[in-house]
Image (cartoon, rainbow, N blue to C red):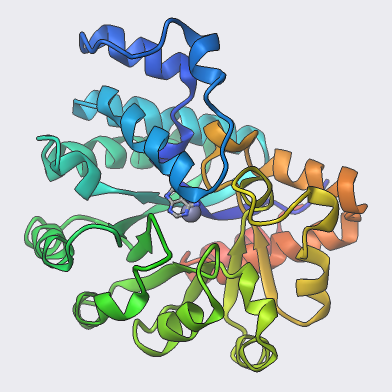
Length: 322
Ligand code: ADE
Ligand code: ZN
């Protein structure tokens, strides 16, 4: 038996499968601009991050009620548990929903409903990270954090995602300072499409405890040294990198080179409904394309558990489970 995995980088809205999109559209009387599921699936061909984000945000319109968010998260937990995930830290994008009139309470309460049930149903522990949309006004992020704190949302941290290039971490220094002061964990997407400089900023200006993606760190040897010295985990998403053309093919994905350099690498699904699979599918793709061994898979699984924000007791339990 192999070690269980902690999934540390997935966007819950990115686990919205085509079937559920159609089911929720029907439930909420939303007219979709697609003829059928095949027509929708034919659009899952991306040229870069923005081409994906356009579809990702468009499809979210079917999410309206607490029940919708609970159903979405429950479907993810069920599928993730089946694929060997025992702990998950999931991103949500409240601003994307608030901007179209869905309240923060609906988003958080719906997701939390599934979070509590997943412990009971699947033995899967989890935490929610509210991610700031970096391509929207800084003021909106400030307000979202204030709202989350005011409602005492049971989130474990704050993240930073969406269109990276031109939206550097430095813009969000104050928001992240407030989050840290309130005892929240901080993570940030950096070095996916953006330059190594954004990873430096995420560390130095945002106090990011983990870097989401970070594959472009390899372009800067001094940065690699820093990440290795401080053992900053990188939440790498191989299938996502191929589908968004961050790397050319899985065969040339730098995951092994990153491990050899001494980086703390973890494997994650990012947006599993859009990029061809869940965490186990990412491991399978690496096994097939770069001959990732069972031993290497165990190292990556162990890294993910250690890099998680789970309690020390939970981490020990997972590290001992085989
Ligand atoms: N939001 C959802 N998926 C994302 C990704 N891969 N990069 C940035 N923002 C995202
Ligand atoms: Zn992501």
